[in-house]
Image 1 (cartoon, rainbow, N blue to C red):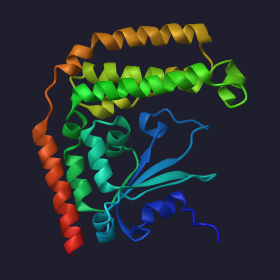
Image 2 (image 1 turned 180 degrees about the vertical axis):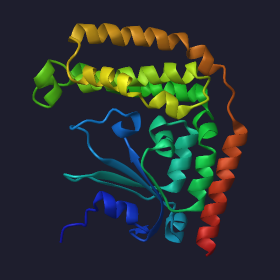
Image 3 (image 1 turned 90 degrees about the horizontal axis):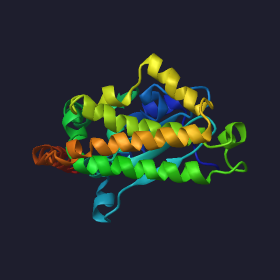
Length: 254
């Protein structure tokens, strides 16, 4: 018997996933940047509270599901906290999603803290973003016609190019607004959206793309001191840890 695959509307209605209480369903990816188009996938991240068995066995539940209509992954809420403390932009993004289904008070409290959470560890945040950039760079340099439709259409991986540019641009935009608004740094206006999507749709030659990426890298290196000079926000870490510890404790006790 094949495993049940949930639709988007069913995901948002979930109260439990394999016996674990759902606390948050968040859309991730291009729509959060206002960069979605007809080729974009629907991706969701779901967070659940651990069971007593998870805690006793030292387990952190995780599961990924891919289908023709929607992809989603399910994570222990403790993993969200861990990644937020490491300033993983892909996990921070979930707190600023344009499509949030909140199912627990702990998430409401985290949303109140989200700007402080986003800038909790800016020195590490800078390095994490640069690490993601280099992962995209590998795709940009190695994608072949056999495995990538963008290479077939435009001669190189234009989607990876746009993603690299967006990552570098985000670092610049976040620093430019004084680390005051994560969402303003990550989300594009309609005019900006048109420019970035034109990258994905072959506006630049590969040589032009490489030159533009190098220019952005140089600019990002210029703001490195602004990130590295920011202190770690230990108060935010302590508050987040206590919030999640108390939530998991109360959940298990009741």
